[in-house]
Length: 398
Ligand code: PMT
Image (cartoon, rainbow, N blue to C red):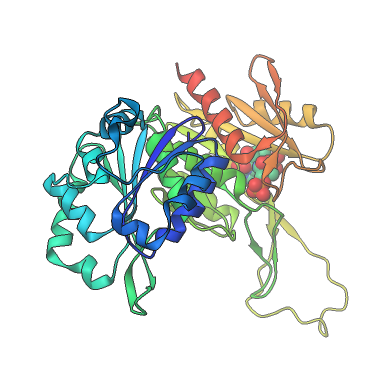
């Protein structure tokens, strides 16, 4: 969780520095406090006043003004931080950190650090591939509490194309969130189903629904951040596959069923946020069905397997959570599915309600437990709801 955390950003001199301003804005919006330490070289790219304005805190550059507050600055900054991020991290700063060189405020703070450190390298591909840099990075990766935010590939400032672009701020935020999250699901395997399925009628057409996958992906990411091994079984969506998660892409409900079957044995917690199609066309035509030859079409449907119900019978000690997407009589249908699918609890959303259900970034749900307890939750983002659901799963476990 980023909210309430104190993040110290060590900025070294690289052109990717401009991305750090965006990152600070995102961190502040997420509720973090931010302080910035810059190297002298970094101040050649962007003036400290810019970081001061963005972070709403004094920016630290000089080594020897620490007696200002009768406080030893590098020690107090190191103690203050819940996490230190070095971004952009140049080859020079990485080399100094690895070798314990403390010749500026940034590297001196690092040498006194007590919190986790995240390093976001940004440099030319050749500099990144340089054996010295590689050796330094590989050595630091083995240090306890050190994390690398891996650079990506693309067009670099020097016009070369290759590895060395600093990770994008939105992805950095996701990684920092993971580093700061307590690993309360370590050792557990969580399987999440997400998104819609597509049931082919012919090579052109298929039956599907409006699921975007957002709810399921949010659950998978929060479970990952809490240290679980996560299988994400996903129907076709527009979302990027999240890092650190074992993704199983599927198309039809039968494929989703098969993917759940392949991991159910090792699963401790199964959460079914997907909207699998209950039906499929009874007959698949391998040639496009032509309008000219078929004036009026009656579509015959066959029933798909009910994944939640089938694996509910094999539940054992596992925790199974389902969703219910309803347009009316939410309570009656949700209670019925809770029993029928042998779930520990079911999260019911009214998909006709604004800010709830399909596609939106928020959801409004009621949770129905075995034994009759019902909890109504206010509107929240799908990430917040994912945290709430996993808190409730963990409460059941303990
Ligand atoms: O993906 P988003 O755009 O973020 O939208 C989120 C959501 C609306 C899809 C999600 O919140 C949700 O409600 N998911 C369940 C959708 C659904 O299929 O509901 P259902 O009431 O038809 O099914 C009940 C449960 O059985 C669900 O857990 C479902 O995954 C499961 N099921 C359904 C059919 C089937 N053949 N096999 C199943 O396992």
